Every structure is written in C-alpha cells, then in structure tokens.
Amino acid sequence: MATREREFDRHAKRRWTAQDFTGALVPLSTSVAVAFFFADGGATNFLDIVALPYGVGVVSGLIGTNLFLVMMVLAARVPIIDSLFGHDRALELHKKLGKPVLYLLIVHMAALIVDYASRVNTDVWSEIVTMLGVNDLLLSFLSMGVFVLIVITSLVAVKRRLPHGVWHAIHLLSYVAMYLGMFHQFTQGTLFAEGTAGRAYWLGLYLVATVSTVVFRIILPVLRSVRHALVVESVVVEGPGTVSITMRGRELAAAGFQAGHFAHWRFLAPYLWRESHPFSISAAPTDDRIRITVRELGDATSLLQHVRQGTAVWFEGPYGIFTESERTTSRVALIGSGIGLAPIRALVEAMDFRPGELTVIGRARNESELFLMDEITRIAHAKKGIVYSLTGPRGRRTPWLPWAESERGVSISALIDKQSEVDFYLCGPGAWMNSLVADLRSAGVPPHRIHNEQFAW
Ligand SMILES: Cc1cc2nc3c(=O)[nH]c(=O)nc-3n(C[C@H](O)[C@H](O)[C@H](O)COP(=O)(O)OP(=O)(O)OC[C@H]3O[C@@H](n4cnc5c(N)ncnc54)[C@H](O)[C@@H]3O)c2cc1C
Image 1 (cartoon, rainbow, N blue to C red):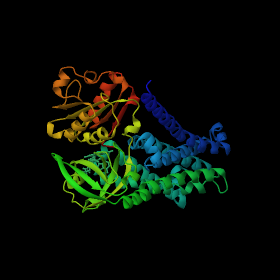
Image 2: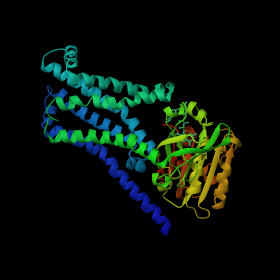
Image 3: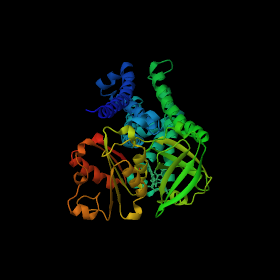
Image 4: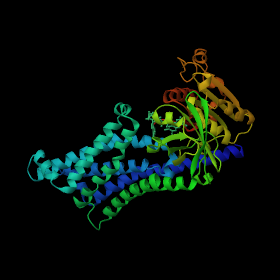
C-alpha cells in the first residue's frame, strides 16, 4: 500500500475505533443504571410474582429515562458526537429511540400503578387519583403527556402535515418533559435516595444532558456568532429560484468550517430572524468569507432569494461529516443532484486530488438545475478530474440516472472503474440517493466507502 493510501486507512481506522467506544457508552450507561437497582436488592422482585410489577416498572423506567437522556444528548449537537457519527446519524438514532422510550415509560407507569394499587388493595383508577394528589407524581404524569404529544407529532404522517416551525416548537417541549419527569425519581423509592451513589450517578446523567444542551445549542452558537460577525456581502442568482449568498466575517478559520459542512443560519432580517435553517457551504471557506447556495422550497428559502447586503447572520455549526475527514482512499467520486451539488462544489475545491483520482457526476432534470456545474467543471478539470453532467427525466430501471442512460443499461460501473476502491460522496434527494446507493452496493462498493448527506431529517 502506498504511503498516502496507508495514511487514509490509518485515519479511517482511528475514527471507527473512536466510534465504537463512543457508541458503547449507550448500552453501558443503561446497564449501570439497572445495576444500581440490582445492587439495591432489586433482583429479588423478579423471583416473586407479586413483586414482579415493581421490578418491571423500575427497570423499564431506568432504561427508558436513560435512553431519553441519551436522546437529549444526541440532539444537543455535541461536537465529538457530530464529528464521529455526523449530525444526521445522531438525529436518526434520536428519532429511532423515540418510540421505544415511550413504550418503556408507559410500561414503567402502568406496572408501578398496578404495583401500588395491589399494595393498598385498591383498583388502578383510585390509585391513579391518589397519585395525582402527590406533586412529584402529578408532574411525572404531565411529563408523560408531553412526551406522548412529541412522539405523535413526530410520526412521519403527522409531521409531514405540520409546518416545520410548529413541529419544532412542540419538539422543544422535550426539555420540559425531561425536567417534569425528574423529581419523582429522587423522591419515590430508595434507589436514588439522598447520599447514595445511585443518586450522584443519576444526577450526573441529567447534568450531562443539560450542560450539553445549554453549552452547544445556546452558549457556543451565541459566542461564535458574535465573534465572527457575519454579514451578507453578495447575493448571486445561480439558476431558477436559486441564489448563492456570500457572507463576510472575521477569523472564520477559528470556527472550524470545512468544505462539506453545513450550519444552521439565522438571517437577522424581517420574518427570517425567527427561524434558523440548515444550509451547506458551497465553496471552500476562507478566514473572512463563507458561501451558501439556497434553493427556493418554502417561506424562508423564498425570502432568502432577496436577502439584502449587510444583513447580519447568526449561525449554529459547523456540523456534519460529509467532509474530507471521512475519506478512506485516494480515488473519490463526488455525485450531486440539483441543489445537492452545493456541498459537492465545496468539496471539489477543497479536497486534495492527484491526476485521475477525481470523478464528478452532476445530475438534474435539465441544464438550468445543474447548479454551480460550471464552477465544478472548471475546478475539476484543473485538478485533472473527469466530469459527467447527466440531465433528463428519471430512469425506469436505474432511477438515479436519466431515462436514456437507464434504458441503455448504464450503471455506476460504466462510469467509474474499480468502484470498490473509490470513496463515493453523494448528495441529493432521498429517493435519488437510495437508488444510487443500491447501484453502488450491487457494484460491490463497501458501505464504509459510501458517504452521504441528506437535505432532510
Ligand atoms: C443538512 C442539511 C443541509 C442542507 N443544505 C441545503 C443547501 O445547501 N441548500 C438548500 O437550498 N437547501 C439545503 N437544505 C434544505 C433546507 O434546509 C430547506 O430547504 C429549508 O430549511 C426549507 O425552509 P423553508 O422555510 O423555505 O421551507 P419549509 O416549507 O418550511 O420547509 C420545506 C422542507 O424543509 C424542511 N425544513 C424546514 N425548516 C427546516 C429546518 N430548520 N431544519 C431542517 N429541515 C427544515 C421541512 O421539514 C420541509 O420538508 C439542507 C437541509 C439539511 C437538513
């Protein structure tokens, strides 16, 4: 293996090891929580049918709450998590955990209501009324109500019908649910009683979730936005309903932006200041300039087509791992569709290539939607790369390709040789990427050589 290949390989292996260690913290923290209960004599509840609801209730509550806190950390945009797994994958796991956590907390609640009712020889409804009279338990019932609302509004069918802002506002109530549910954990039972190691550990988990959220979602973005003082410098039309916005700022290198990163941008202009939206950077960043390219899709992206010079911009980021740091080998294919070409443009410029190592494929319905393709072609040719521009309606056999190529039986193997030795960076609409990934997998490209960025969560 050549020295350069070895360096890519070593770098990738280091990252995978770090991923494994960090990923192991999730089951580890869950086991520690359950171990505290068992060390407190909790195991005996599983040997006695009468005590079983108590055992099941406590264990499901511990696992559910632990995973709920993990969900909060995953959404907190913690740099180490983001740089190892990517923001989208962290959010994917956050999303996946939502329903199991809800089920665990429902089991927790139901089992403990049954247990408490049987202890005092009453029916469950009377027991619920009694529990609602206890402040901390009332708060935990409210917490459960909020959590149910969040999970329901996050179901794909419901979320699709809600404006993103409304869904986001409801989702922010997760923090309220987290704290409403906290008090009864310390006042009911002996597991987290004052002075116990369990209490210190459990408070520690809450602290980690809270500090991560406050530091990485509030303090750091505010400090960075103030320090780098971004303002809109120019707005250039790139194609139908699409503009590139260049922002000027100071000491941007310190913010750590790399080609392929995205950030959440908040433009301090009428209507726009209320929401931040994610956009990828579309040119290699410099110490005083950063550029994004925005396609009109809804309210905010329409207003951004006409954002004024001098508008101040706040940001949260940079985020994502669609960057050179994910590269595992020297040959690279950068493939983008429509506005997905924005981060591809930045990567073409910033990545280091030797002649013959780079292939770029731009895909769109028509020429006018091959955004930034002129710039991409010019830079790629200067780096002795190969460029394909593919336009036309979606193919039938291979939907990521245009109809004509698809009917001729073209696939990724016809465009790039020795595909299994190439790193593929893909960015475009979800269905298009799924079709491309299927083509890559059938051409023998291993999953670790496929890097993709989704423009939707
Ligand atoms: C990681 C990432 C990178 C992106 N990069 C680019 C880019 O370089 N160029 C570009 O044109 N677009 C990009 N997008 C898409 C862009 O963020 C949305 O088009 C934009 O937020 C839509 O806002 P709107 O108010 O115009 O439309 P709306 O009508 O409010 O929403 C349209 C769609 O965008 C989604 N959306 C809206 N607001 C957000 C938000 N705050 N966070 C996540 N999704 C949201 C909604 O779920 C909906 O599906 C990117 C998205 C992501 C997730």
